[in-house]
Length: 288
Image 1: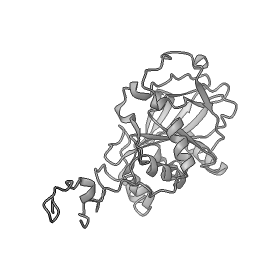
Image 2: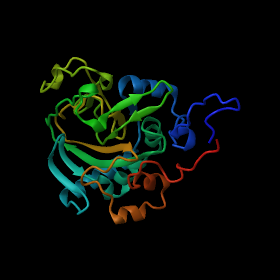
Image 3: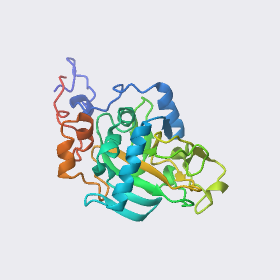
Image 4: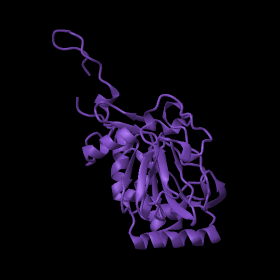
């Protein structure tokens, strides 16, 4: 590879990006510019009607069955941070498996993480009892969770180290049990002053009302929480996506059976690939 022109003047050394196809994904998705701007500004997007009413009903029935008799490859946590949790819920088959690879969600995952270099790192169902309280996460530069980091560059590239898609299985339109967040807090440089503060006393906190079957996709660097349900228990599906090199959350290793039954599904099998730094074929040298 030449480092100078015919007259001997120095040339800029080739970078890794010049030599290798790193598949950054810039310009590969069809995400509307309005959605990209809204997400960069607020830290979340509402995605209406991800599941049909029949799918919501099927998911609810699955969670009842799993909670009553938890299979070996799903873990029941009676006291998770938001309530009872069923970890590795994609092993439950049916809707709870299919919802990890919804095309509308994956289009944004590709946009906001790192082109095609993303994978599913965790899945769970959250079962929230009436009056179950949760605390506001920190978010922003003060957030101690390194895996939550968020960046957006001037050329339009995003680098979210973790995206979470929450899908409501009950209406939260009245605010009861709603997901809530401090909009734009993923860009905050100062720690928020609301540690152990009642959520109703946090002035900048906004509810994100959802119908059953709708979801919210957000960067984990966003300061967020759940309002407590009032009279009825609420169930949520939660899918977490990270860069292709991020390892699975504890208890979220896919079973041999799951890998076998998803092998012919391009979207699911991609999500369940082993952690890798660059995908197969990306290390081919380009013509210079």
